[in-house]
Image (cartoon, rainbow, N blue to C red; front, side):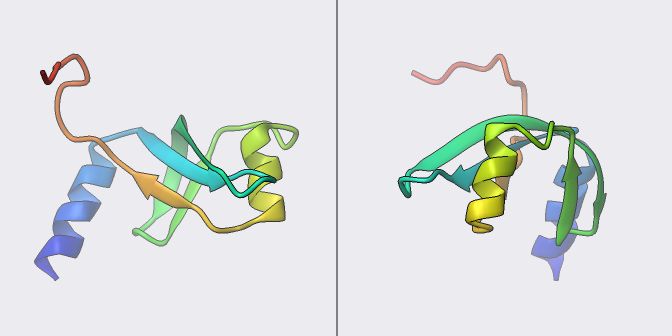
Length: 78
């Protein structure tokens, strides 16, 4: 349960998630997306046009994933 609590804290501290979808050829497609609200960790609402690539991907294949990054986005790892 501690992991779920921590995951919710990370989701609440971010407004951008990395949304993974599957394109028409079965290839993964990852894009940073602004989300407008969420219901726990099970539902997230994103800002996008219904004609966008992501909307088309999800309509054809609802398998998705969502990642959040915690930390400074300007950090560089070498």
